[in-house]
Image (cartoon, rainbow, N blue to C red):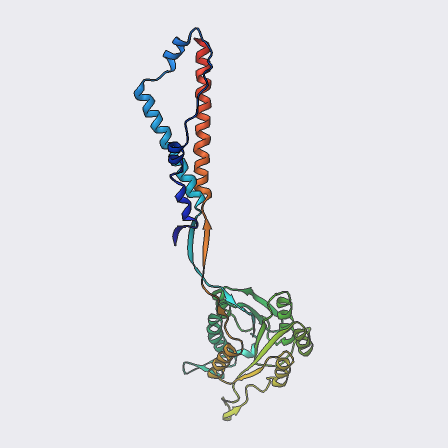
Length: 339
């Protein structure tokens, strides 16, 4: 950050008063006068000695000179040049809808080689995805039996990531309201002026609750130019122990892939199947490609005009000088009446 002058050539006017004094003829004084019978008495009271007169003259010249230089500085437009700013181009309004219903507690996925529930995988990878979306406005919807707006659209990606990390299974109910989640996203994104409205919906089941039919909600989303990417979460098989020994089951048998595919295709999006944490990571990386992270505009600097500071100093000094001069004249007049 630096202090610069936008019009530095204005300082070429600094010697102008000296040129006026040097080249213009002095003011001719009038020869008229008023005879005062007690002039000698008044003159003795108010005529300073030569040394004080010379000192006062130099003080006045110094003050006037500083005021002139200060005026020149104000005319040169001093500016405070701030830091460099970058602004995103073509930023997206990105809403995440995460299923937190009871089925998300199924431990059929792995993280760091350990079996974990589905929501733990979503939390880990979704927070990383949000952190990469620099320049986008990101929001968060959590849905179960009902859909709730956890975070409105914001550039504060760190707060959204914190809300994702703090999401709990069953906090919105045990069932799954996919239609309500889409309807809430449409409501929150319909007033956004951006042409890039994106919803990423993650679920592991079928629509079992809610007041809005998912297909009807998808139709409303298409009318609102909202692109929906759906992600089906859950392994295709897992081994469970029972009284009759180990057996293999399909933990994702309730996942309605046909519905998620229709929702995505009707809005211009795409359906992804994530059977493992690696699959989900690849889905997020693919989404970064399909919906690229906004490009950053050329660097710009903040500029703050400061001309009013030197201008204010000159006005203050001259006003104070005028007040002091009027007070001195009044004092002289009152003293002359006493004499």
